Amino acid sequence: MTARSTGSPSGSPSGRPGPASSRTTPPPGATVPEPSGPDRRDLDLKLADYDGCFGCGDQSSDGLRVKQTGITGTEVTGEFTVLEAHQGAPGLAHGGVLATAMDESLGSSAWVLGKRYVTGRLETDFMAPVPVGSTVYLRSWCTGVDGRKAYLQGEGRIGGPDGPIAVRAAALFIEVPEEHFSREREG
Ligand SMILES: CCCCCCCCCCCCCC(=O)SCCNC(=O)CCNC(=O)[C@H](O)C(C)(C)COP(=O)(O)OP(=O)(O)OC[C@H]1O[C@@H](n2cnc3c(N)ncnc32)[C@H](O)[C@@H]1OP(=O)(O)O
Image 1: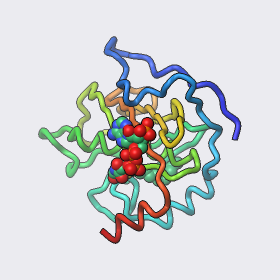
Image 2: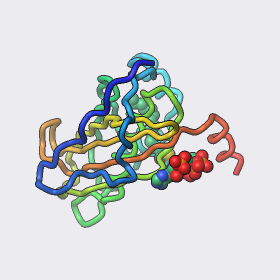
Image 3: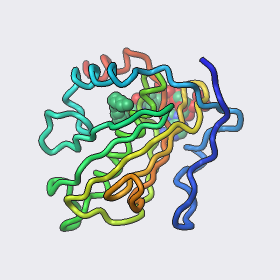
């Protein structure tokens, strides 16, 4: 696997600091590997096998049903529409729903790295309220990998890929062995 240097973190469109704390910022020397995960066709097959995810599955009527729309390097784009079931304050998306959408998006970007990752830490900045009925455009990318730790950032924009930023996120994902998931199921 070849590697390139860690890119600089996303800018700060509002003058606020970026979303990443020291725990979600890659250490010096961390690199972003070339993705070795699935191509688009494999991805569709994989998702067809797994409808139960609250973030992207089709089985949960109140789930977010995030649709992944593109993969370029480690950057994954997706979108979902805010339903009434996703409200916090009347008419507005619940912050936890937006955090879940970011977890899904960041997790998809980790997934294209080609290993099994779970979210260890998730940080979010809520930048603007999101009305029910809005489509939120998600974008996440990897900022560095250091051993078992993958660092990711992402954003959700309202109404279009270039719309106003509603939420920004930074996360640390941890690589786990396959047994992680069977162990969790067995309790
Ligand atoms: C393209 C589209 C594709 C779509 C495909 C589907 C995508 C699906 C997307 C779905 C998306 C949804 C995804 C989800 O929702 S995943 C579900 C939510 N997450 C979990 O359930 C994870 C629960 N936690 C655990 O299982 C364990 O705690 C893990 C496995 C994370 C670590 O326990 P483990 O015993 O294995 O390892 P360790 O404790 O030695 O830690 C290892 C290292 O990591 C560091 N560390 C750990 N935690 C933190 C922290 N919080 N901040 C800072 N650092 C942290 C730690 O200090 C250590 O560092 P060092 O001492 O080595 O330096």
